[in-house]
Length: 364
Image (tube, rainbow, N blue to C red; front, side, top):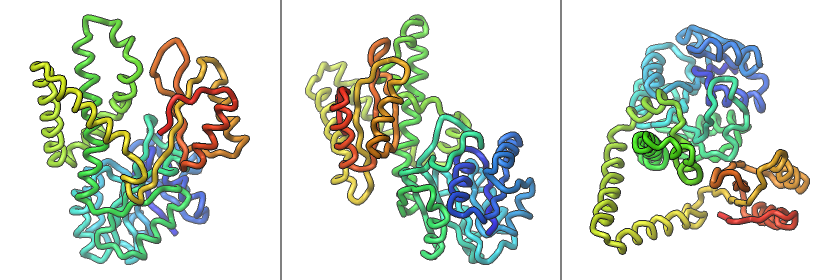
């Protein structure tokens, strides 16, 4: 089986590594405009070969994974629709928006070629093939938009990516873009706007940004994302985002008026409604979707503190999904967020860590 992965960045290289775990005999061919990233992938065995000829290599491929920016994926689909591809080839992508991509895939599908839209909800502040890892997607949601693809080909794609250990979600393109626009694209806009506004507001107060820890850093972490990538993502989902931004601006305007009128009831209700919604993001409200379970505990600011905690959990065979240091405070104890895949593991970890003398300050 020959697999062409166009785009050897974080996502493309991580998919390649995951495929290799379960399908070592597969011949993976990588392609990327960044020659350094491509050469790294070849030297370190992420792929078995590289190419600079998309048209020629695509015609020999059994699976084609388009792991480029959305606008590039759309152009690539137009090219593929004109090529004599293998009849049973599976074409998929990892784009962050799906409606425009599915429209662009129609000519390909009309020729009888299978296209399955995809979007793994995982990432990192790192980029390039050097950042790729097989477990990047572990327990992450992976959207699939089958369109006209037969179920057996969807099953084949899922089997190919078994080692990625993702949580599959089958969805249509419009629903995907609406959901991702609200929970991913809009928050990136809000975070960037808050950072930019804070920079201007505190321009005369240099101490201000030095003190910007805690909630500010937590809510604006995603503002460090790649500007070019997010320009591309937003432009491909602009109609939905315009409506969502209008709703968000209206919400802020109502709060502004309440502040001007000193209407404490509206202000309190604003925060109360958000708290109720946020506190109820759990399994009952999410139907059959998988959920994560967090513990937040104080840790001393000294070398080896985190390693000691992970060692305790490892000795008890407790598996961590994620670990995060929250910069809630500075120059005193920090807060460590531990994420588990199920409630039973969370409860066991809670008990074990408290017996070891750690203070668990919150559970989600």
